[in-house]
Image 1 (cartoon, one colour):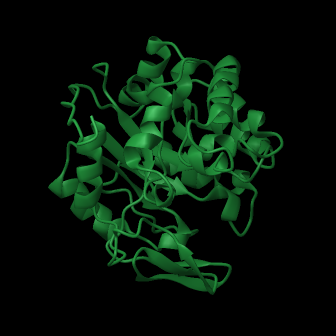
Image 2 (cartoon, rainbow, N blue to C red):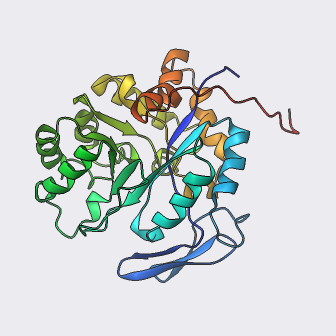
Image 3 (cartoon, helix red, strand yellow):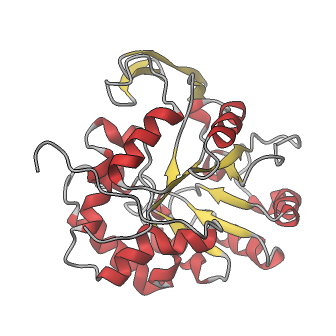
Length: 294
């Protein structure tokens, strides 16, 4: 296994899940199962039997997979986790970057956070141009904004307007532009702008029908590379939801073992680009922990 810096650009954390989806509450019922829109769904691995998705459990996975740092994002389905993420960042300052959650109010948090998450595809009004003052405030703070855009190109023109109006705004586009939906390349093309990057959180979910080693996911990475350049793409796992059917290490290994990507491209995708975007200089490769099967 090569010596490289590895950063996961898309994970979730919570002590207690308390979100909403489809107008109904989302909450844990035990053994990693959550009530989701009135249906019991395996939302996290069953070893999270108390439904607590804690920083300590994630760090154990990170150490085994040799992941130096994770970027913790948020979603409405988990509920606002600002308070817990501040605690995690304070306890493990070298292992996490954290995002506050924008909930269509002016009092979204900036202090203590590295970025702000906007679930753009779920906004009551999908017109991102109307949020220019929000983006301007984030730009002035020097923090980044993480966006999950509506499928395809529904919001890409609006986002280009924001990028043009906020030239110093640092932007990540999540879920690899929702790569399995029509028009996803328009989201990737936004990364042709100076301060815009793409992260692949949820890539194994989107290609779950194929499963390991996700050949179509690798092909999508190559297509995105040809659109915006490999230096604008970052790996993300979407832990813990994607861990219901694979291990954290497997979410990384399908990239490391792919013959379609050069070692330089793997280095860039798995860590070097994220070091630059998240200002995480000074990290050193973590030691490999052999498992009992090797």
